Amino acid sequence: MLRRHFVTLSGALLASVWLAGCASPHYLQLSPERSTQVASVGQGQAITVVAQDGRGSEVIGSRAGGGMSTAQITVNSHEIIPRLQQEAERAVEDMGFTATREAAEGRPSLTLELASLSYRQGNSDQPLIDEAQLEGVLRAIARNDGTTYTGTYTSRRSQEYAFKPDKDTNTRMLNDLLSDALNRAFSDPDLGQLLAR
Image: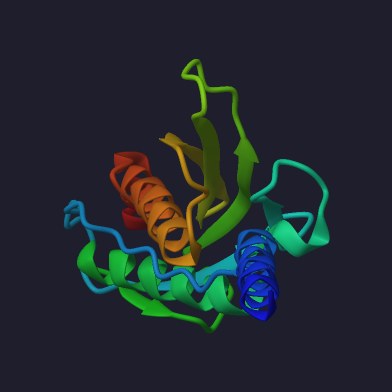
């Protein structure tokens, strides 16, 4: 009798731990990286480079598909923006310019903005299969000699799954998503051409 109660109690505890794991919030530390080549158009000119967060919220969605705070996915601005700053500076340097964070009158500038980042539940056609729909939008704003060029670069991904993705899987998917957006942004020849004018 005692053994039966112990087995039942153990099963209940395991179920509680499993449910808590499924519903736990994810605070993701992302490290997207540009992998595409960029055109070398600069001649060492200084370019002011700034990364900024244009999102309305650091919460990008929910693993449960609803508003449960225990299932929210968060990407903090103070963690993702310094990474985007590094990638923007690296791209500018690879273009042949000299990246600086100091603004100066008459100096060309490049602003890289995280316009939006979202993670939401989709509708899979397969029984017992769920779907996550991810979208990341970067905006690049180049200014030089009174001219402004703005490019918007969107990356989307749909991922089907039988079991909810864990923290590492979500981190990897979002890194891939934003890496693709970075590739799109710095493959735009108009950015470098305006900065080089």
